[in-house]
Length: 150
Length: 265
Image 1 (cartoon, chains in turn green, brown):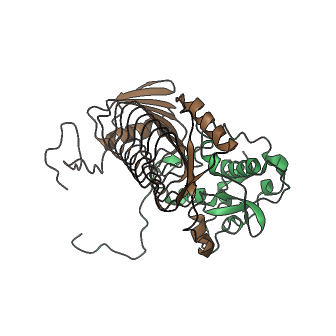
Image 2 (tube, chains in turn yellow, orange):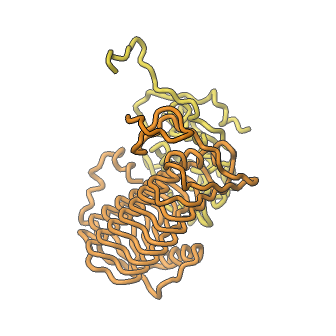
Image 3 (cartoon, helix red, strand yellow):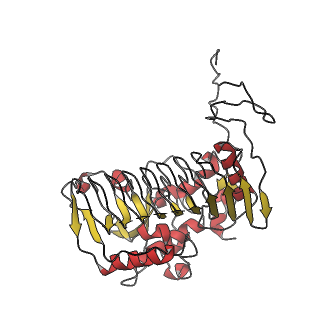
């Protein structure tokens, strides 16, 4: 199992920033090493016979750095390795799928604590993902008592 | 909550209007054969249908589910967040297959309004007609309606591809922000009104264009997209399409806060 699946590494944050690195408190190796995403199968990772939702994912830029937008976190993930000309979108999609499949999307981390319904932990891009949300209980405010009559 | 007239065999709190069943449990009536399963929804409420569906997909690991006799019930197959295949033999009411992220769903009948609304990823194919607001606010995936659709198809669409084999009603693509629509037939008035981005391809006539919607030239990439989608879904391709996009006269993109800009990505 990859190191990124270690649940103990996942810390929810109260920081105000919304960048991937700030939310997760770390960088990820596939942001820097192109070889780590070469074998990502985009068609296999998406429903249907083509790229499906990845059709709308393109290489963009954040702070002047190439980046891909992770809609599950509402944040950009910067890409620091050199991208071959004409393959910008392909590598943006591969980095994003790698990020999601390894369970590193911060928005997905929130499922541990906040998923209210039974659902796959890591989403449809990975087979046999663990199930979360089976035992959600409303959060209780310490010292609060339900008003009489309710 | 009215607890009168509790059906035989059902326990706990029960809303006779069928709007809430807080204590409902999956009926466990499906016939499971390996990775596929089938169940009859004729006697089930929408909540029980969805509970049975989720039990099969999430708990039993079933990859292909067939639902018989859906009876045009509302809000069926909502919130399916994994890769699977669902076949619905019949018609659905409103808000069917919403909030999907991964499933491939085939509906052999008709659907009411807002089918596949807010779909994130997946494939929804409808063999007959669909109501208004088809594919409202979808963010990704393919939504294919082989028949006609009502008004405001793809309203607030933020991604994905909507394909209509027949005609589309008024205000198609209203406030569209990204994604693609391919309409083989005619389109009603106000098409693409206030669209911000994305493209609408029309094979038939357009009654009128909405505010800031303009015609654009087809590119080889557009032709490749249309050919590919029609091949995948076995649709008859009209001889030619016209492409419509945002005229960008209403754009004030650069004035938005960065966080607002991300809302439409």
